[in-house]
Image 1 (cartoon, rainbow, N blue to C red):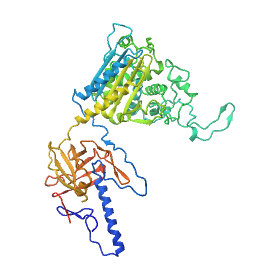
Image 2: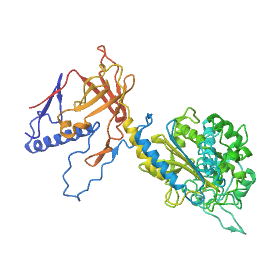
Image 3: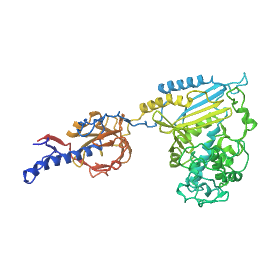
Image 4: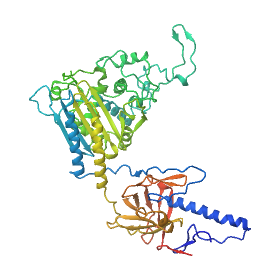
Length: 594
């Protein structure tokens, strides 16, 4: 007899893939190959079915094929990669130690030339974990005290966040039809030469005197989203202008007519201050306010309670500003950016930027965008080349890869000041750094801080992960179930009333380590539960020439059927795994060798 014949005994006979089946008498040669072929087919089917609920570190190693070279196994990547961002109860020793290290990193950096004052904030969810204030608010005054979380700093390019918030709000309100609308839909006179994007246009005609008679103009690929994400291809500034230029938007559009794009839009990351200022002024013309600064004040700053954030450097604001310095120690002037104000004019405080971080993380008492728009806002758009200063770009962010996370950053540098606003959305973590003076030489301070914060917050979240919620009653869902008589499951309550799903049977016990045969079922509502692995597990498992993604299975929904007249659910589905009709058995199946 070939193989190991098994029979599962339940309320009725249940066939396991290796059950012997009586076949009609066949010629010897056909019978010889038919039985092993059938066994092979059902064995592979069993493995695939079982794979839907495998939670194991490895399968038995396959023998190296004689037809190919031996393959060295790669390191196992563990999941879930990011812990659930649950609320934390403070103080936590692991976070206290990490924040102490951040304090020392920043305190040591204060000795850099020209750096007079520095303030920093660490945010988690809706809580300020830590504030640090170093140096003197006015480095020229020996009697000056240290800054605090209400000290004002110029935030330079962090100002670019606000034109993007305006774009998304107008998109939600329907004033902007699409984020991917071309700019000329909102500025009819906009045009610019794009010599890098004419490959798809008709061939260029002959020269006519000193002017080229080229193809008919095609729709501009300079879209609103690309303008908000350093992908527009627009020059860094308008031709022959400085940051102090005080022209109008119509004058800016006239200057662009004879200018050229520096990159084909959407193909390359290229930093453009011009793009954000032009976006802000053009969009503002389509609002009831008609003015960019007024719109930001009434629709963003006031609703979010950012009372110490603004544009105009009034005498009162100047009195509250930390004094900025060049690296030489010379005081920096407080000049006005004129038409370029939307890209770098603003000032703010650590406290206000902490509020903004909470809003963008979806954690604070206020909200600005709907969840779907907020998620789009924080998503990367394009990977940048190695020559660019970030790994990816977004609206308006630069994304930096660090310790398995995307750190969402907006950095700014202006005469006498430097600033960084950063978020790590999977951890609901934020870090704000404001400097009165240039950034210290050497490794980036923000990256150093995250090297400490990321593992500490990750550990704190994993240790604080709550136990899966139990249902009001376990009885309707507890019992034994089977999927196509191939795989078998037991659902039973744990010590705290939470449900647990255990996979069992001879084949499972031969393949799956005991630690990964049982999953928790987190009760969501009604008859719906969520598969939950309490510990880390391999993200993927090899199945012959394919891979099974366990990462995709963690968190899948389990939908139990309506209760029968006995008050029991007759089965369940796992739609996300395309697994349906996992049906209840009247009693525990008994497996025996025939």
